[in-house]
Length: 569
Image (cartoon, rainbow, N blue to C red; front, side, top):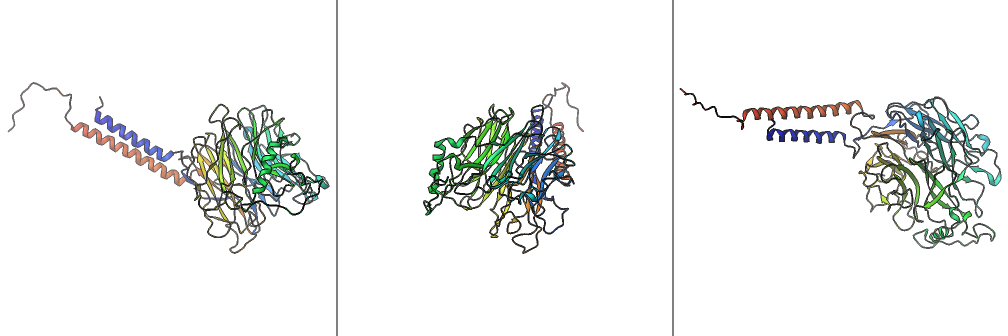
């Protein structure tokens, strides 16, 4: 029979073991950030200029990670892949671009040059721009391509989703400036593939400009064929109340007061009649699909022919019939900044799950260009209502820092991860940023302390991220239960003192949650194993000491013998 003291000692030992195990494998906060890996190490051209990658993790095998590779000077896109959770990378020779549309890179702001997503059985989808020299450069008649691969990029089959080649005059179209989102619904007999982009009619200018618009195309046969483009605004600006709310914001665009113009537009122009649906559009569409097959798309409203321009508002377009019809609801009011949304769905929460969205915005009155924060909102009723916005960056809110271009992922276990570009550590270079991260393991109710992912600040006086090039995009992000892989463009290898252009490479790092595995280094495994061994040895010594003490104590259950004690001496 176990004594009370021994029982208490055993409980104490078990508690010590539990605490130690929790210290080793806590999922509330990441365990570590790995040292960055240069994804573009094989390219030694000093003029190489790689732009921010899109990253995806294969849900069927998280050790398989892929990233887009887009080089601005060569204007071509490719794929990098890792078979060990992002520790090492290689680049297949095959190109996802069809031979008649060999170029991919386009001037853009706010999104990667291509988007990646996995379908069933490890099939990989790659949405990217497509054009050739006959298409009048990289800003006109850019088409949209979706390529698919069943061998992780060793070979590709490509489909032209939107062909703009040959369009003339006002119809000249940049259909992929930029491609904004790609998602795959794997529940049916075939993968249902959705891709969104911003349509720009580059020759349609004020006072009769055509506003940029968010479009989606749908494939119900695994990206072999696609539907005609679908306008995601879906007539929402026919509502006079929505236009009236937007037009009220034009007189407060600047913090110094109303802005007016001195030149009246032509009487028969769109600019002379700002209150019309034809002056409103949108961009930055971001996709997600729930477990019932409902596709949700968040996008930012934008006006044309209205001076000064209206504020921003975020809208949600939802379809329950695979994109045949959409209903549109407004997420945010018209505010100075609400842009670059990233939308994801998770099964946590109510019966309809939860829609999670992050975006860049500002809390200050007026339009303060450098004052940007990362905001988070969620909806537990399929987008009908949304929570109050919450700021995720934990820098000093009394300071004016730019935190923008967020990206979000949902791991299979429901964990939310968010990464973004952050200028809090700029040492006076005037433009230098880092990638920061935060996570939530309780469906967005609480968030971890911000974690710096980049090991050194990125000097944006070099390369094409800023300095009027504005070839910028959110950090790439792919997630598994055990880790996330983050990708970014980096100028650390540029020649010292070389400003305005120069070398720009791609780097990745893993934020690890698992104590062992998931890309943990061998050294870390040894340390963790050693710690676990010390805990085990400590428990054994504790139990041995308790057993010896028990043996030395008089037994409370021993009976007297009834005999006289033996004589001594």
